Length: 344
Image (cartoon, rainbow, N blue to C red; front, side, top):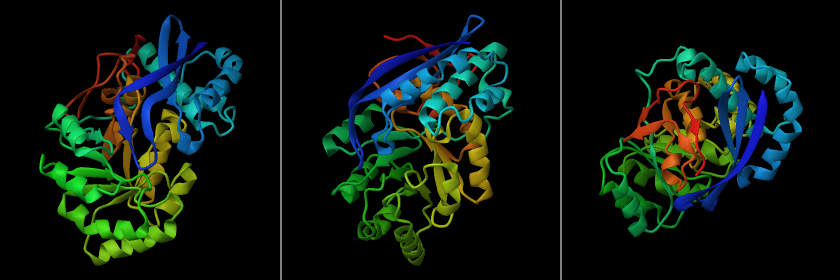
């Protein structure tokens, strides 16, 4: 195989604000694997919360170049095992490489990855639509630009969280998926239980600091006392799949990230492990290009909830892949993850 690495900046249509950060540009590395005239693509983006930069991602992949290029791809699982240990815990770089391998493998067979895996779309969840923390005027504009979705993923963690829920609830009756990114104290989370129930929140993600498992236990007890059955999902509270067991003690589900798992090869095992612990499973990255979203969409039939609307937040086209029709995932007539890359 031939390896090509492309650094790309993805400017956003609007500044995206969470309790953790404010983003106007996503810096990413695109991995291209070529064999027999076919090309597969994967993507890894930097994330300050995990101390990952594009320079780190690029350096790790460049360091592995000879080992990658000496390999003839026939089976992405065998390739992942061939590269296992090479990335020394750098799962973001590993994920980009693995997703590129699956895209190439599917193109070799001229079939989508999800079909090669024997998955069915019949009970597949629809994608949520993401709304960051912002003024009511701008929130209204962004909501009005994409109305009638079946599910909205709302970032909270500001002083106006109750007002934000009230404002958005006046515009739609559909369920809300609230992601706090660890932005609440235990006292604030307690205060939010009743508003969450009142305004139709169906899922709550990472309300407290990533390491506050004791606080989460207290919060879950308070939710039970108030007869609040909203499932609480972990994201920042897990760094590796080994953390799932601890999360299962105080959370109801986990938000799976390809970059944290290390790609499509390990993610199916991660989902099985979560299910075995009695956890629900979501899959969502907030901001990414079509490359990353199309890879994530391959596991959609295995998930309870999914969010792959990142490309709609980005003001730069990197090619084609999956599309969304008010949350319904539309797969292209392409093999692999369905990506065709054209940088503009």
